[in-house]
Image (cartoon, rainbow, N blue to C red; front, side, top):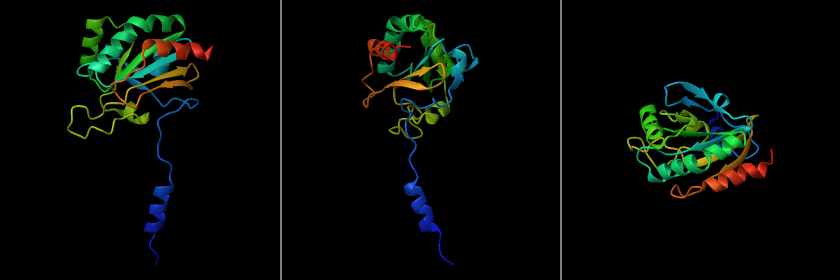
Length: 180
């Protein structure tokens, strides 16, 4: 009897690897718990024209994330709302961490908790640099997606270095470039 191992190995090698969602694709599912403890989906928090979904590492210990969240709160949340888009943040942080940050910084837009990193994994954004046991295990690579009302990704802003984040002005420019 012939071994099927070479066939299995060939199938695994030939199978395409999962990729980070790209512009033009349907956005993977998004659900999380907001700072009030209520389960939310992307559809429930979307604006009239869509959503700007921001994946961030932690509102507790990541200084780059905190700075980005503050900048988006001060410079992007209201202009996005005026353009018909909701701003939504998603992290592996627990609800109390997100609630504390939102209260301290007067964040009025949804911050969603994904403590098991299920959404993060569904988007293929888990940062592989952190093994189990590390406090950062499960964090996403920072990314911002503009998703239209039909659930299609219209723009992605993402840097290779987690210390570099697109400014709020770049997010607004990406939304404005869509001309919706």
